[in-house]
Each structure stands twice: as structure tokens, then as C-alpha cells.
Length: 72
Image 1 (cartoon, helix red, strand yellow):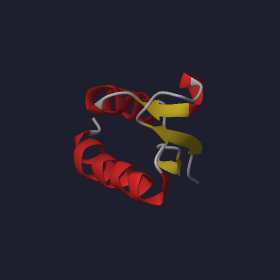
Image 2 (cartoon, rainbow, N blue to C red; image 1 turned 180 degrees about the horizontal axis):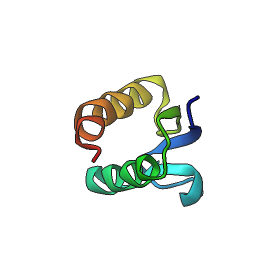
Image 3 (cartoon, helix red, strand yellow; image 1 turned 135 degrees about the horizontal axis):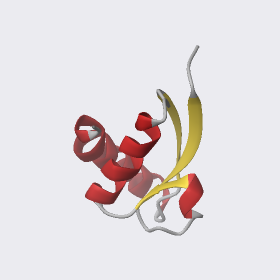
Image 4 (cartoon, rainbow, N blue to C red; image 1 turned 180 degrees about the vertical axis):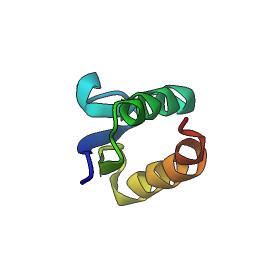
């Protein structure tokens, strides 16, 4: 069994904080580490970065490069 959550990837912090991975890199790492600490092992990411598909791709690449490897 997996515990999953759907969160917005929201670098601009426009969405509700309780439903988002938002802020700078360290804030995102801290947020994801909190989800992990309560047993979440699967996150469905809904990218909300403004600027169209290119900006969303950049946000996801930054998340995968800078945040995911550092989740404690």
C-alpha cells in the first residue's frame, strides 16, 4: 500500500499553502520532508508555474534537480 498526495508545484506561491510545494528550494525541501515524515511515499505533482508549457517544464526540471535529491 502507498500513501499518496496530490500537490501543486507552485514556485510563485500562488496556491493555498496546504495544497502546495511552494517557495524557494529550501522551503520546498522542507515541505516535502514533512510529507515524507508522515508516511507519504508518492506525490502526484500538478505544475502551476506561470508562463506556459516552457516555464512549467523549467519548474519541474528544477524541482527534480534541486529538491527531490535533497528530501530528508
